[in-house]
Length: 294
Image 1 (cartoon, one colour):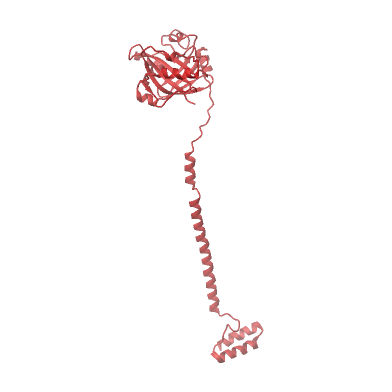
Image 2 (tube, one colour; image 1 turned 30 degrees about the vertical axis):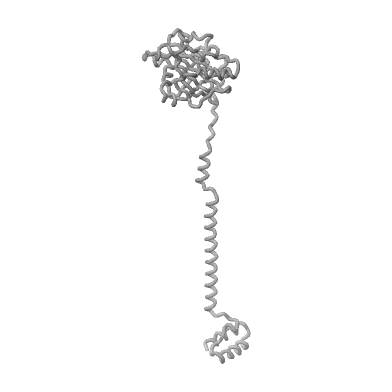
């Protein structure tokens, strides 16, 4: 029989031919067919079946690993901040402004004009005001003299002669000319202060910068006043106490044309007052009040 040949072949390889032949003969008599299980030999079809089962198990395990890894990544994305979220958080944090070292240019201007009375430079962005400011021993000399100390009715903006310590004075006053003559507007830098009588300009151009030898001071315009009653409270520069200073500030700005909402002067504040002539009404003065910004 075909099966006998197969068995005979295996019996030779295993060295147990007689035992196998007897067992097979007995099985053939009972069922007419050899039983491979009884002789310890796995049929070829069952071998293939086992291989198939193993392959399926391997595929299942690999698939389980892949799926598990996928869901693990998804959970990680949900529980961890994304790059986009991190960027947004960083954007919310205010950027630190770089510290710019102040460069004092006043010595150069003193040399250029051969004038040691030059003590400051005032700038008001948006109003085209950028002018040097001088100081003499009184409040009249620079009404009629220019930066070269030459007679000139145009004059030049000047500090009150009592402002001897610009870095520490609680109030600094600066005076300048005004005119109704449009032909000399460009020669009088403080003419543009008239813009503050317009509410929109008052709300828009808040910043004033005053450069002195020690530093550049930033002020914010807090009030505008047209002085008509001859009350010269703003000319007071010496104060007996903190309370005296605060009370002075209230009196000085009382009756202002415009005043910044909620603005109050405290004992820690420092003030700037700009004064020019005003022509509506006639013989009045326009006062611009600024408070130093920390």
